[in-house]
Every structure is written in structure tokens, then in C-alpha cells.
Image (cartoon, rainbow, N blue to C red; front, side):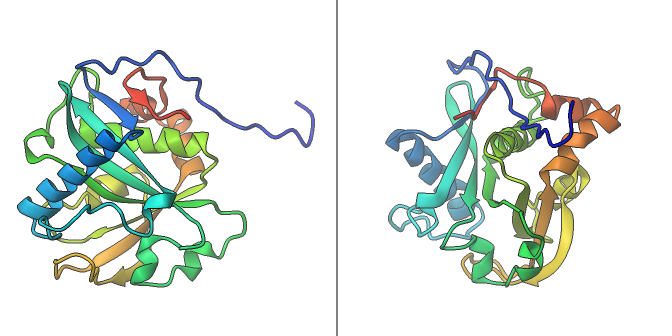
Length: 230
């Protein structure tokens, strides 16, 4: 391979099986967005009390036009979701609470923010044949594949540090690093402190070559349960 050749990694889509089996896919219809709204109301609203579940559509904020929504389905029912917000003129949601100049400092970074990651309580610890590391890991895999497909270099995540449902430990184990940015998320009704994490997509990608872990091989492998290619 000669000098100056740039390798643009892409995943070749494989045949998807949505039907009634477990899958991760992108919201693409109004009914899909209604499922996002239902989950936000159920988990962040009724279960955790962080959002006012009786208000109008919860997802239609100023970040919505620059967002994609991942949905996790099991047995034909949507049981989990994650929102990815593209970095655009409106900025990222975390910037409502804390400046991220230090994250933006390195030229060429292409950011998205991963937020509103939630799974219905009954499914949080389930391992399925099509999701052998669980639904959280499958959503992370969908996020990773979407980011590589869309030339994203870094993922920002803001999350609570001490709540019962925080995915802080799994995300740090995955490769997210602490940025030192801490704040109170005044948008949600929760007094716990929040922190911003940062994931370098290239670093995570390389782990599948440097590690013998079956988990990292799972993250990178083609998968007919992952339907996030556009």
C-alpha cells in the first residue's frame, strides 16, 4: 500500500432479521419515535422520576433534528433505546451544563453525544442468543457501528455517578475515559452529580485486534441483529 493512501473502514451490511427476534435498529418512522417517547416516559419518567411523564412529546427538543435513535427490540417489543446527537450549530446537550472546550481542543475531532440510554427494568440483565452480552452491549455495538459508518471519531457520554442504574462502570470498562468535567444536570430531577466521558472510536476499534476478549470480537463482528447502516 503506497504512501498517502487513506483507509476508510466500513461495515458491509448483512441480511437483517427483524421479525420477532432481538435486534438493534434505527428509528425511521413516527411509530418508532412513539416507542422512544414511551420508553422515556416509562424509565426516565415513571420509574426514576427524572422527567415529567405527563407532558407532551418528550423527544421533540432542539436536538431532535440532529439526532438518531437506536431501538432495541425483543420478541417484537421495543425494550431499550439510545439517542445519538450529532455535533452541529446547536452544540451537544452536555453543553447546557458545562463547557467542553477541552474536548473540542484537538483539531479534526468529529463528535456525537450518546445520551438517554435506557432499558426496561425486566430486560436489563438478560442475555439472549442474538445479544450474548446483553441489551446494553448490543446498543453499544449499534452505536459503534453507526459511528464508524458515519465517520465519527469520538463519542461523548454524560451520566450520573451514583444512581442505581448508572452505566458508569460498564462504559469505563469498555474504553470511555473521564474528562474531569462534572456538573449537575438541571434538566432532570436528580440531585446526583453527572460527569462527561469520552470514547475514542479508533481506540475501541483497535482493541478487537489487541485483545483476546470475546466481547471485543463481538463488538466488531458482522451481525444480522444490528441494523444501523444508512
